[in-house]
Image: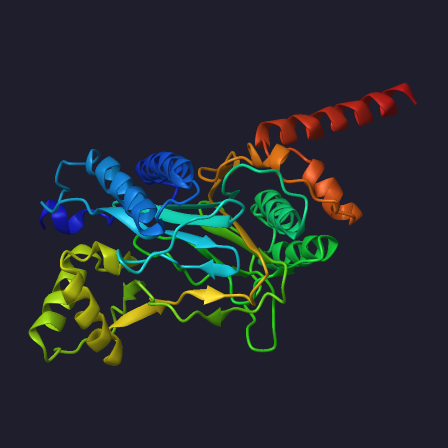
Length: 387
């Protein structure tokens, strides 16, 4: 029997240190990409240019790593795992326009940035919300940003081994209510696996009659992308009358397309984006992208990430980050701190629920948590001895 045949398949979860390193390295690139995109979000900036900047940075930086071929002689796949999107005000997400079909940012806009990259299929994703132009706000924009931020902080503390996805969903609901906001329906936080951005284990933002998920306990060595999206409106998105540009290959469906441009399009998708989402902007010939996507959609070769929006005049905020459930505790590898928003955003509302307040006051550092528990036990032991 050959060595290759007897060799066990590589372990693709966090029990393999090489896998953990790839997640962390992808996370570092995403953090820097997110910071660069935020820096570019200034009044009058073109959103298509900003999205291109984010994608280019992730492509270049992932391109510098893991350039030796794998044991099978193949190159390690890497690059963009979710194209840079900049969605403004009432737009919920997935706005990554093509050149010539873009819009520009305005001072005071609530801009949500969302992106992800991968190394060898191990994905790190992140999202952040900013107020364009740096002016201080104390209106509904402040409420929705603080609702989303506090919900994200609660999720960070609740996604721990032994806890359930239901606990996270319930916390989202309580925090949204305290800020007079609503979690956006249909938003799911997915488990991440190798080459899988939308794993089956999910945390739902809010349950509805139409959409529910099974309850489960978080387990050691899992990875999750936590996606928190809050709205000042009802939290119901409708498709925007804009070109949808973010797609993922529906790998289980095959069909030989009729036109040459469509075949060229699906061939390029298969080579460059076999399993993860991409933007039509990334297709080398824009004409091929526009023609090819129509035919590919008709034959269900693609899954669409539609641009959704709330009602006019509403605001939507998002924070997204990647968590590794490691033996030492839950580790957040992407997602920026509130930073300048803390001084810029002044909401008159706050978290009122006592259990949530207690949760938010707890440490996210596993070592500190263990020390506190140990100190409490030692104190209790001393009291017993004194008695």
